[in-house]
Length: 71
Image (cartoon, rainbow, N blue to C red; front, top):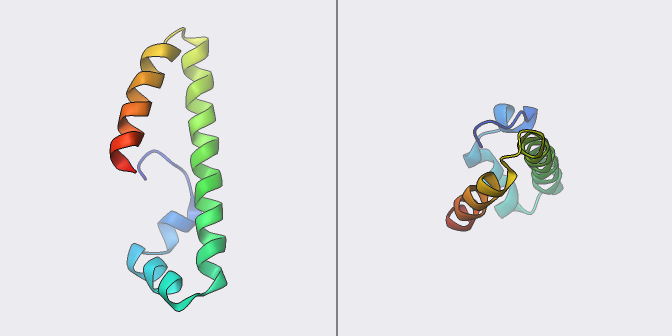
C-alpha cells in the first residue's frame, strides 16, 4: 500500500507472502497482522489530520469509496 510505513511491506514481496499463505506458514499471518496494524495506524493518523483541518466528512466519503473498490 502506498503511503503506509510498514517494514514488512518493504522487505517481503507479494509473491513470497502468497507462498507463505499457500504453504500454511505462521509467518504469513504474522506479516499480515503487522501490515494490518500499520494500515490502521496510518488510517487513524489521516483521520485525525482531517478532523483537525475540518475536512473529515469529504475525506471519509472518499476513503469509503476507495476502500470499497479496493476490497
